[in-house]
Image (cartoon, chains in turn yellow, orange):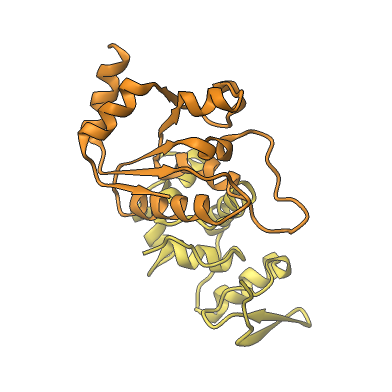
Length: 116
Length: 130
């Protein structure tokens, strides 16, 4: 499936293409600076607590080639970061609105396929 | 617990059975079936996968995406566990016809004989066939 660019975001002098929902058109364009810029657009500030979750997401995609829906996201975070952080409440607090969608966008992954 | 008891227990706890009967890579059947299973699991449904016929080939180890650069279905198979889909049934005769052993498969499965398959049919659970 080809995604068309709806707009671009300029990060460190490079134009990064975004699809109509704000996800990266080309996943290879991602860098930590891109994540910061995407977060800043939504007035989010990324702390180390956010970054460790984004790293779990990127690892999930490397292994399974898909962005996780909420339930497997919670499970993946639990496996990597422990029971305390592997809860939907913790993730909701870090990434208000929809953790699965927000984290996938910031981590440079496609929109979660099975996300509700 | 005898095997048939553990199967009866699995059947009592399930909401949906997805049957996969096609080989991977040649068509979209395996992907579509997996997508349905994953969506149901994301909704909190308890899902079992039943691999019959060429469907057992989709569990083979050592698969690669190949020159087309398309995504394979094998990473999705590996992901089932993250969606708590852990009830995987494989037709024993389908394995035997293709000269395969459970060790040739990428995930731990339950090998089903004719009696087991009959028990699954008698349970009359919602079943989607791909």
